[in-house]
Image 1 (cartoon, helix red, strand yellow):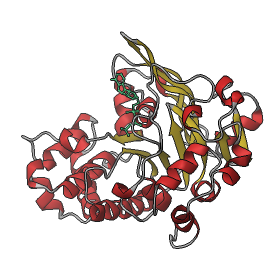
Image 2 (cartoon, helix red, strand yellow):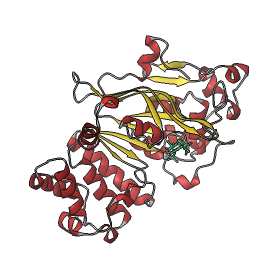
Image 3 (tube, helix red, strand yellow):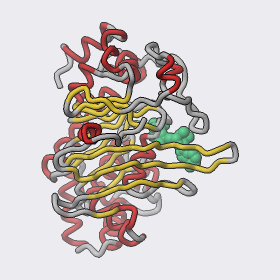
Length: 359
Ligand SMILES: Nc1ncnc2c1ncn2[C@@H]1O[C@H](COP(=O)(O)OP(=O)(O)OP(=O)(O)O)[C@@H](O)[C@H]1O
């Protein structure tokens, strides 16, 4: 898929006031068994103050996209493309041109990211308060003012500030640790908070309560939120827009409600049909037939063709361009216009996207 053919194509992933612009972002790993392209020509805007959900199966490249945004792709991965951060409408920062010191600043003070499994990144020998003072100190912030902000954030997240600041990581439950980590991630007042699988290690009740707390935090502190997840119900509930990844590419982008009701990519429709009910636990999801491609051996043409019921010779031969389903809804599929008709939502998915589930 290539998304830079014409102005019309660009309109599909461009937003009015982007805080981050990702253009033609690619990540490759040179492996013994060949070149592994784990992010392919990704084009995406993150709109100021939106909640964006990035969804897709495990291994589809979601974390790579997030790491690319912060120039944080692990060695020996090679990132190319253009990442631009706009602190405000008129200012532009070329993220891939920043030196180490500037990058460190960007990653805490502008675009903060909670990595997958980050709860274990707390230093077990340091109490939670120590993590806050160390972070504030490392960035030359006024520690006293910063700790006041930390206390306020912790209490916004329904934690007892003094108790939590004195506690060592092992003394906190998973949910408490996750909330303390969120407070730590935003203590230096970033504009954007990127969360990779923010609730994966938590039970369902804790997941939902953390999400509603994040929503509150977003309003109070004017944050832009990006969720990377395979939890479709989470995205349905929270995100203003969603981006769907399949095989290291963005295959559909648009307003969440529009995609839930009129998904135009066969993969998105399969993903929605695999979710029995957007309120149901993820464990009840039915798998999609077939398996995701190996990054060293991605099928030619449309990479979804081996699993797609609509695939024909065109799909085998040609990588689809981006098409506009509406002004703000784009899809990379040759057969997008017939997808809804050919792949109807099953009853559960239809119920979940139209009735029953108030979004
Ligand atoms: N250090 C690495 N070296 C080589 N390949 C890697 C490395 N890290 C990840 N990959 C590969 O990159 C691809 C995309 O991985 P990524 O973690 O972005 O997927 P994901 O969609 O976030 O998956 P998950 O939901 O499981 O976190 C996968 O095929 C993965 O095996």
